[in-house]
Length: 178
Ligand code: ZN
Image (tube, rainbow, N blue to C red; front, side):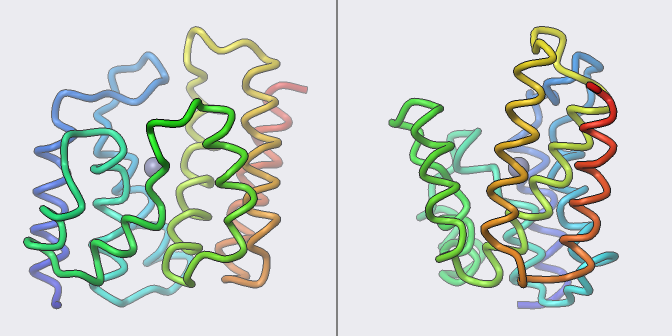
């Protein structure tokens, strides 16, 4: 796969997430989040693999839109689809159980999946600290930040600069509710 596939993944994700906005109540287009995740991978983690960047851009399409893994496999190849599958929660489970499973399974994920997860948590923790979802209490934000810290903590040794970026985002997030 090459760079043009990265841009088709971006276009595909933008279309699928088109009607969605980030939770912060600022009407920020959802696609900004996968773009942030892919940007962190390029600029902080030093990723250049187009499959990994395409998977980063597509990482929430199966969980949050009607996209299927078969569709991703057909359009972007089995490798990209398998990375997205690894970072897709089982939506049939209640949210607490999904969170628990994410934490327990984190250390056993492939290297590409761990990179996407850490960048994902970095983006989410920053966004929630800067633009807290209006319905989220301080306690709910605190519990999200501490859960994200445990998930990333379970994947230490994946990519030092990316983990440092997460730590910086977490420190700001903790300070925002202190
Ligand atoms: Zn995400």
